[in-house]
Amino acid sequence: DAGVTQSPTHLIKTRGQHVTLRCSPISGHKSVSWYQQVLGQGPQFIFQYYEKEERGRGNFPDRFSARQFPNYSSELNVNALLLGDSALYLCASRWTGMGGYTFGSGTRLTVV
Amino acid sequence: AQTVTQSQPEMSVQEAETVTLSCTYDTSESDYYLFWYKQPPSRQMILVIRQEAYKQQNATENRFSVNFQKAAKSFSLKISDSQLGDAAMYFCAYRHFNYGGSQGNLIFGKGTKLSVKP
Image (cartoon, rainbow over all chains, first blue to last red; front, side, top):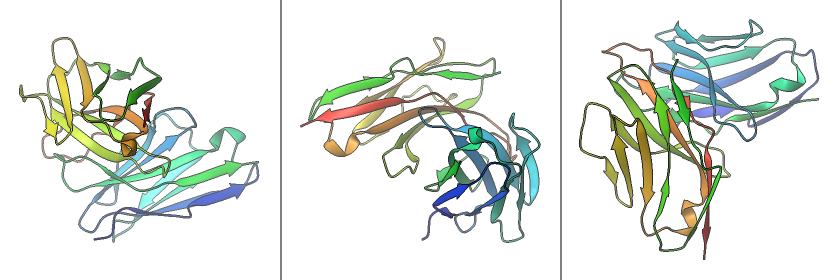
């Protein structure tokens, strides 16, 4: 079975640009979450979606948005990129409320 | 708000020896989950072990075991018979318990970098 897949794996953007990151959860997983991991830190929660509805939002500015599609895949969008948005963006999926999360390998975003 | 603290930025262990990584957390809830994740240079976060707070018995997964002290809010990870492949960043994480719902994000510590010497 395929795990959580994220695309692209690496991305370089210029300040002020927009970026879209994509995530496909494990088949059957209806919950998808996004995390930002700055170098040397633990991941920070950005969004959680379940059954296409937002179920949680971390302390991130409105430049960050996300959505979940009928097939449970998800997109994370970041507008007006800042240098500080440079990080590893991790997607995780989960089957039920009782379970642990399975993570993808992440998208490395560099803003120059 | 819940917090997770890992006080050891780096640890080192000799191959085949045992090492313990520390984690403390702060919460006012009585039901929650605790996790240890491993992140090798490949970047993928891999679940090592999980503990439900309502279970008194410490979780064990092969060479990995935890010492869960609920009253002390402590959750340490013991790695026995350390192997070169155990070298990675280890993150302790907390999630509150939700009854059949979909909420519950992970709160991570800052991580401990484990080196394994041959």
